[in-house]
Image (tube, rainbow, N blue to C red; front, top):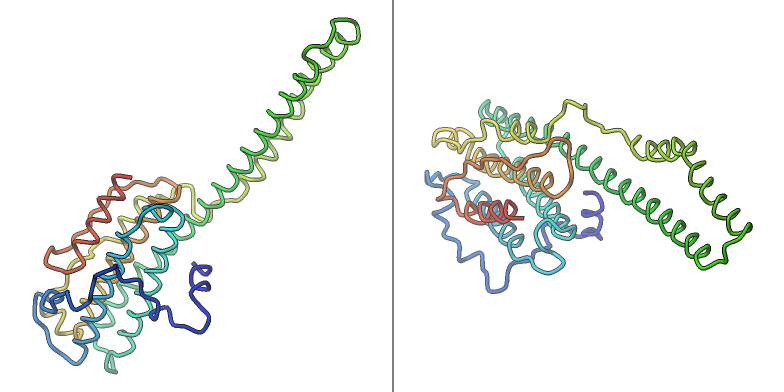
Length: 287
């Protein structure tokens, strides 16, 4: 994640980098679709801007092809960039909440931060999954190298005239293979060295259960909740769904401990970004 943010650095805010799909305009989104409850307060313009950015970013993830096809490394990097961008804008909304903050605002914020802490475990598991894939690659290189060496030795011995020297060579080669058995534990120790990249989560930890915990009680706020939080609960809900989707997509893209793709996104269809998000979910499930 740091690499993605660093690549977008250079003194520019991550919010200044937009990749709107060709022919797509923010003005095409009806403002009335952002809040079915029609709340109105001093943050309404900021809230609508945030909802629109979520829609644009999700549609941006939909417009992928070639090397950036869904669940590819390039697409996953874009997914992380999208999350970092939206999170920065969300934090900007939180800072604009009038002080002192109400109990309702603190409660909804604490719920989001609790989900964020749960998401950190997923990030740790994803990191370990990446390291595990790298170790598999190293082991595969060792296996291929040993196979190539054996094939080369066979080719060298092949075609030689039969005789004491050839028999000696063949017997020596055979003993070499047999004598390699005692060294097998050393090879296993080498493999164990790769496996020693111990998982930072317990063996009983489950990516599927963690994703379920992140999405637990993630419901669209009621009208009175939106009013009590100056509209912030709507943004918190939106960011919570984005967080859940990003963690779910990362688990789908990278091997994790006890992962599963069963996830339910309880998103009202009237929300403008619901369509792109559910479409992305379907496409990931197809992959």
